Length: 123
Image (cartoon, rainbow, N blue to C red; front, side, top):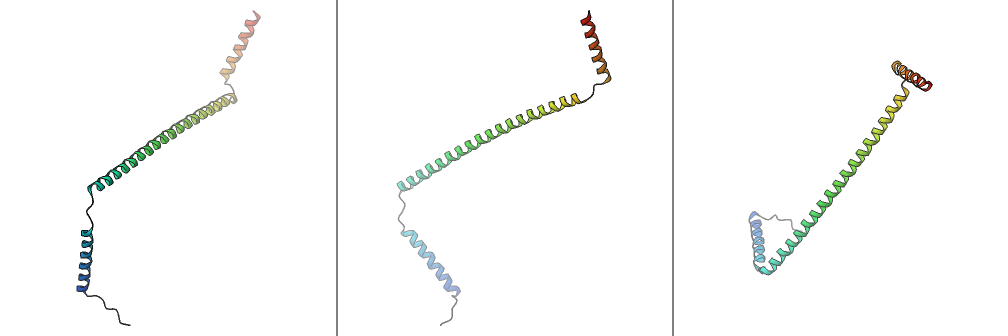
């Protein structure tokens, strides 16, 4: 079996040149593209681009609508939470007011009111 012979620099240059020439010949042999065909391709590409733009706009509009609905739900949840917390705070304040014993001045005012009511009934 013969050993491998590495191509020389000149061989590689020649091979590259012949490959380049072969590609150029294939390109030149290609028939020119008809303008009508190019115009039809351009119209098809523009129609496709326009459809994509419309689809993107629809998706963006849907996303904006979903975002607005989400923000609206979040605001409603926050308002409900604030209302619930306000009610809980009011209930806690009422409970605290019931549990604190009346001060001496409050007790005296209540006693005086009862006394005045009793006197008013007896007259």
